[in-house]
Amino acid sequence: MKKFAILAFFGLAILALATTATSENSKQESSEIIELPDPRIDGGISVENALKERRSIRSFTDEPLYLVEVSQLLWAAQGETDDAGHRSAPSAMATYPLEVYLLAGNVIGLPAGIYHYSPQDHNLIVIASGNRIPALFNTSSDRVDWREKAPAVFVITGVFERMNKIPGQDSSRFVYIEAGAAAENLLLEVVSLGLGSTYTAGFDENRTKEYLRLSEGETPIGILPVGRPA
View (cartoon, rainbow, N blue to C red):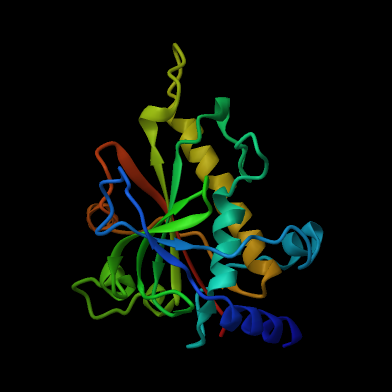
């Protein structure tokens, strides 16, 4: 409760700064950029405790997340960790083929919408407005997908052409390995923040590509819904 109260205070205190900028990213519906709070590099719990406490959580309350929490999770997955541009997750030959997207449904300090994370600037580029989480997971069946209730959903994609070709090897495997490392970083940060999540790979690939407006050659690999454990 104490940690939640602190996060709530900072979440309410931080306002998202939106500025108009020119961008070459064709995914943008507009040129709006959302500045994120700086990530913290201390606090929370130990890595050992996070490993011990990590569980696959598939049931969330109706409580929102806060922008400060979303910022921390994005940084944990793919944020830059030094001036040389190294990231929180290792990358084969430092090619960094991953991209991270956020579907925000109920995040205090951030309008509902679809966003593309920029590790270099630690900000979000607006792709579309409105809560698209239920529609992403809605199927023709009567069964409700548990992911629809998540206040935020993180999507990890891979741009395979960035990976250097190695003679006699299928370099695509490096992209999948890196996606797993980024996802585990996010999951451990989830535990540190007192939240819940799990890695899911069952989704409509074509629908996900359409919603995120992915470029040719960019493939969704994993989806991580995040919320407060019910």
